[in-house]
Length: 190
Image 1 (cartoon, rainbow, N blue to C red):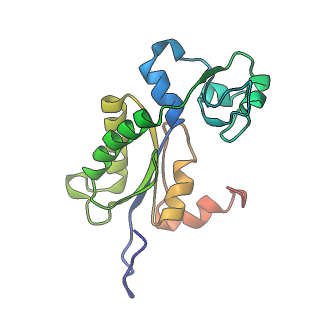
Image 2 (cartoon, rainbow, N blue to C red):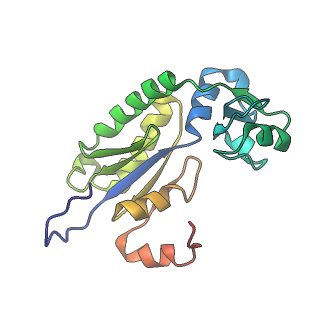
């Protein structure tokens, strides 16, 4: 997605698709007893475990990825800890990325749960990148029973920032003429 020819000043249409609390969401989808609970996927809270993923219910208590599991339990004693299942996440990721590839052959994975799609030359019947983003969100929700936040922008950086803007299950579109007004109020860290 980075390759642009010299003098190629066409308006790019880039989507950043980022699954919401991916590991935790997969477990919550597959085990309805976990619905609505603060769920952490990660290592043993009685040992040196680390949080790999936290449901949005757990995040409300300040639990975040890369935090020691013992600290997560102190923040929310009712947290349900689930051991990671990477083969399951890989299978699910393959199914989700297959959906992405139906909209563009230009899919650049960033991890198991996020990817950039260049839809500039692949708008097809959808007509706009926004329409494609809406359809991807619908398909992932209906076919995989998971949510994905999507950012649409003229480059990868703007699309990435936009995908995080209205998580979970969000869609943020930043057209080229709104890039500066979108970025201006954001803290530099973001």
